[in-house]
Structure formats: structure tokens, C-alpha cells
Length: 393
Image (tube, rainbow, N blue to C red):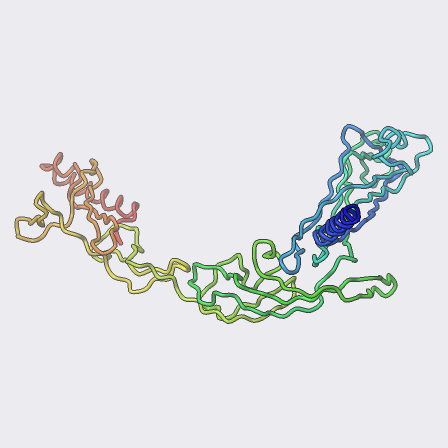
């Protein structure tokens, strides 16, 4: 009886372990083996030390349903020319191009792409770039081409294609619209919160004569906007540009197909305080202005003249001049022999530094005080300099 119980216990443990292994097994992904070709001319040579193959998989139009991974791996299976695989016999591969029998060949590159999940979909494009092939320089003129026949230059061996068997978008419906609808014109359209119900299809055959595909039903699932799926969502206006106040609707696209027209409200991003909008010197006819500015488009609102602030003494009280008026300007001691100096103040409303010319402060006024005629000439020169400097508004 004890032996029988032991045997039954072992059997139960074995069955349990197999059951656990079966449940934990990952879902099968998708795998595609692709062969691309490129015709090499009879004058083509191959340089072993320069040879390299670069395979580019464009995953910018790929996503996966229900939050599954769109990750993939790929490997090159063979690189064949003249019937010889570079991966298995590289020496023979290059030697064939130097053979007297070489008269051109078809380069065939075969590679396999493996996806972790079978719920991926979209558009699967690829590009193959091969370096290391050389060919004589040709210009299309017989005698010249003959003279250049010994001048070999690298040639661009590149071809691209599409894996048409890859699952593609069949139907979709927006289930949840973006969370954000109200914007400032400093902001870009945000898809955050968007959820889309997606149904995929799989091409099973292709008729090259008619250009038609035969499809079968794929998976149905959910795609939620996020870092892994953002590439599938586009918009007009673009989600990469700031919205402007004239926009009241954004057209959303999923995998290049219109998903929905989404109403939005866009307002000016007004500054919280006045901002200076003039940079020229203050004059009697132009005090300079500040305004409430839109940080998005730069539109000005409620423009007001600058308001010079009083000069304060050590007690914090306004300084008065000999007439009892409040002093708002401080001389900068920046005069030269021919140029008047300037004085500055701070706008009490926007904090801008204001500058204006202080007439009659050029050094010649003191140095040549007793030479009236010369001073008159220098006054004209001084006026011309102010015009040149743009200080007369």
C-alpha cells in the first residue's frame, strides 16, 4: 500500500509540473523570413576589408494590441552571390568576383525578423545597405569610359521592401477621447488618455497581376496612447507644433487613417505682468511702452507708457530737485567730447531699464564754453550723431 501511494504521489507531482509548465508558456510571436535581391554588373568587384551589411527595420509604424510588446529581434541568414554564401565561406565569396567566368550576379540577402508577440500590427518596412562593392567610373561616353575602366569607385548597393504578410489595421473606433481639451497657445496637442478599439487583418496571398491581396481576420484589441504607441497617433495641426488661438478642432489620425475630429479650445497665454515692448531710447515724444504679452504668439494687449520710478535716498524717501519735483533719472556719466551722456531709470510697472539722452552734457560744452561759434558747429555734429545712433524718435 505504501509503494502504491508513493507511485500515485509521484504521478500527481509530474502531472502538476507539466500543467504549470503549460500554463506558464509564453504566447507564440510572429516570424518572417525575407529575401531581397540586387543585380550586380559584370564589372563589379568586391573588397573583403570594406564589406559590411546594414539591415534597417522601420518600426515607426508598428504597435501591439492590449499593451503587449512590439519588441523584435532579427538576424541575417545568408548573403549569397555567384551561388556562394558569404556567411559560410567568405573567401570563396570574394574570390568568385575575380574569376574569369564572372559576368555579373544576383546578390541575395535573406534575413529573419522575430516578434515577441503575435498581436503586433502596422506596416513593416525594411532597408538593406551593403558596402564593399566597387565598379569602374562611367560617364556615358565610350572612349572616356574605356579610359576610366581601371578607376574603380565604391557603389551604393541598397534595396528596400515591405513584409506584406505583416498584420495591418482593418477597423478602428475611438473609445476614449484625449483628457485635455483646453489649451494655451504655448501648448501642443496632447493625445494622453486616448483609447482606440482596433481590429487587424492578415494578408494570406498576393496577386501580382491585379495587385490585390487576400486577407483573413486577425486580432481585436485595445490600443492606449503612451510611449510605446505614440508613433501610431498623428494629428493636424501636428502634435509637434504649438496650437494657435484660431484652432478649434484637431483631426486625429491612427496609423495614418482619420480617427476623429476633436474639438479644442485655445486661448492666449497672457503674461502675468507688464512686459517692455520698446527698446529704443526714451524721448519727449516717445516715452516707450509696455504691455501684457502673449507668450505664445507675441500679441500685445493693454499697451501703456513706461512709468519711471523715483530715485530714493538712503532712508528710502524720494529725492527732490531744486524745484521740489521728484527725481526719477540718474545720470550715467557716459558722455564723450562730442556725444551727450545718458541717464537711466527703472519702469515701476514692468521693471525695464529706461535710457534717455541728457542734452548739453557733451564735454565740448565745458571745454569750449567761451567759443560760441565752435560750439554751434559741434552742436550740429552732435545732432547728426544722435540721428545716426537712432536716438531721435
